[in-house]
Image (cartoon, rainbow, N blue to C red; front, side):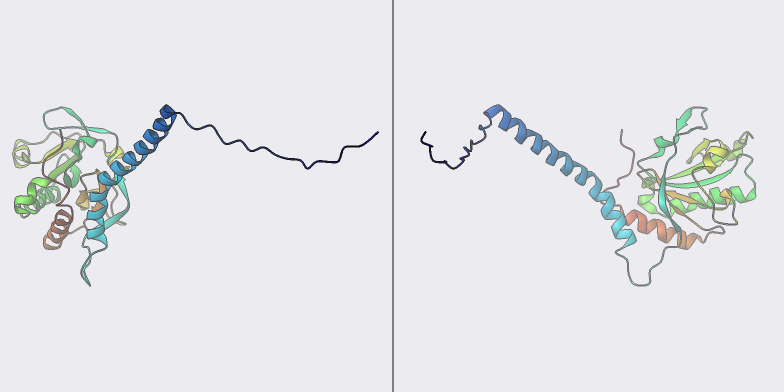
Length: 225
């Protein structure tokens, strides 16, 4: 019987079927949506990143911070306090403003009163920029505020908070007490600076001025509704 000669094996390559118009539009729409989301995230974050870059990196030779920078920064905690009108207020409601914070027992001894006076004076020295920074007193203990103290802190945000919960957020320098410092929180709600005990008002004001200047192009006075 005659044998047929071997033939080489051949492969037939078939092209993929073209996407129909609806599928192509869906792919393009998904890709465009992802780019838009990424662009939006960059736009939102860019001002904050730029202001911190200006403050931390772009600085004159020999310039130093007086306040201690907190690294990593610590966001406002999830617990609430009670304001002077007896209303419960979450600490997160303090966001969207720079905060200058003091901590003290509600009995408010002489050192506490000095801190409160210093806070008010530091804020006033900021001039027209003072509306971008809130004066905040986080008070602990169960004592009732005296009438003179209520009047003296009428321009401040005064919140009665749990001391143990507060100690889980703010912390003093080694060898100091929580009440010994003033603390700075940025408009995003991050505790980012702690001024030394026995604070030098001139140097503290210099730091506050720099922070406000560095964030001026994105942070405006008043809270978003």
